[in-house]
Image (cartoon, rainbow, N blue to C red; front, side, top):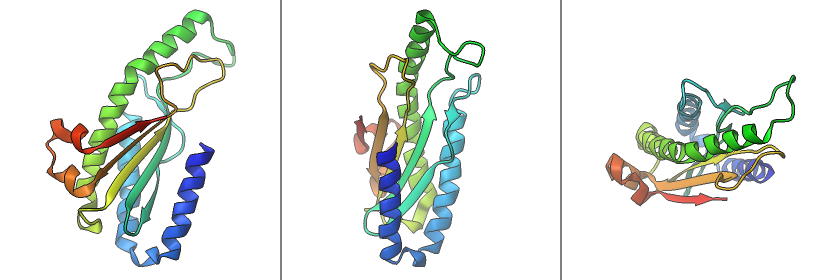
Length: 177
């Protein structure tokens, strides 16, 4: 998380130094897109909402594109004030749910990149990148195998707009950490 926050702050400083103040329409568009990403992530599983840890954040980098970051829990933790230490069965069930939800989150991220390319319209060049990084924090007690700590997806705006929905994976670079 610290790495992501430092990267966002650093890129924001670079954008301001490069004269991003002149990109007022882009900044307004980015804020609107942040809200769309928040809504998409918060309502992925309506019967059991995941926890969005603060609103999505973004920065526009002249000559590179738009970078969006978010931080979420994939499932509600099986702990509460009355039961702060989950049982082995609870931990195993929680892990299974998170592993099952990773592919669904990845598809939602691809869809969000395509929607972002469309909604930013003329505010980005076709060669500009759109990046979505989602951090998935974990508890000290949980099993983390098969669940990345962070998923980063990147695609060029023009390629995202040109790709059919079932072809998005071919034009998006995905990295998991």
